[in-house]
Image (tube, rainbow, N blue to C red; front, top):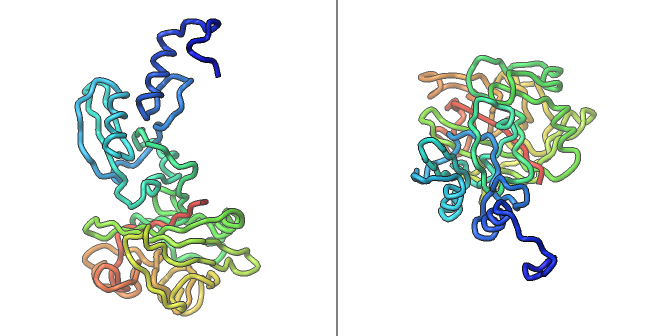
Length: 294
């Protein structure tokens, strides 16, 4: 590398000096092409973050410097007002707020994200309301259906198999109740087998350090080792396709119900653990299943 004392080195431009100063002293993304970035503008869902504070600052560089000092995961800056909002992911780990579907959603704002992961969480199932029935036949569950990843959606078993056939994947179950409390659990590794084996699920144990709730460990209720089915007693009772054993500790594809029926119903859209909102009779408000290539 050239030394600054080299007699052959030309006097640097003001722009280059600004870039070097930013890279040396500020852990942030600048508009100068020569700087190594630690912050990147990406679309993000503000509802998945908790607000740390809002500061009045003159420049985006100041905003990102303050964000780094505050250990923020994301920031937004309004140049006109000088408002610098510092945020942290409110879904567990920082990467949990980086969903692939965000980048496809033009309605979401651009946020400054610190050290964004190289990959993002890919949605393969999502429930937000009752406008789409998940009581579907085998071929529909194989090919996929719905309104897109941000709404009511099922990716399709064949695509899910193709994705998880290579690499090392983990799965995330993220859901909310009717008081807008959020819960999540992660298992690793995770993969889905081929059509010849009826898209059998292979799922590792709960990653407790990355989960806000526990998980039933009874093998008969776990998706692990089960083939996917859209018929039989469990599928018929729950009006859904899933990796049923006897039957399952979750039913994300069940009938969507709203209060007051959602508070006490049979075969609910549920995550079963310890009663209350985590029981088979409480129908959850939202449910999303995601995978991440580690």
